[in-house]
Length: 179
Image (cartoon, rainbow, N blue to C red):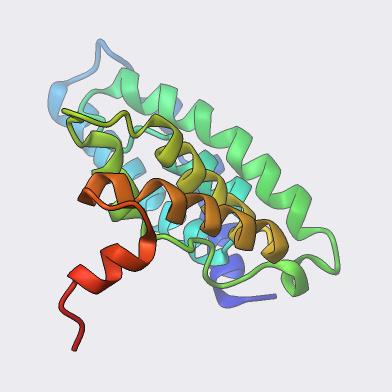
């Protein structure tokens, strides 16, 4: 079992045992803040450990969680949402071959680049299809489907040249001024 998996399972138990029920919306605001930050002190390292495991499904589940909560009601929602992730984590970790099939790097394309591409304001080109190809490339790579990756890389390469005013990817490379 990897250290990230061990860490995630340990934090999962602490999150489940966290006494959030001892504090409610009508309690003292300072007490509410203490409980919110107490939970976040467990949840943030849990999320980081889950992402380091390298399981694409678990990483996706964690990345959809809102970890910027400020109020006790958000803490209740977060803890409930986390239970599904914790259940999934325990289910996959009980498989004796689990650690052997997970890759340490689950993204082919740096996630920040993909995020920037998603947020880019298109003036002349609709990047929707390119974004979807990139998302599928990361998913296929994370699952170890390397033949699919090769096909998706080719599809991405076909969508890049028009953005740079070129007909082929070779023309884009020729304009880059190579070293």
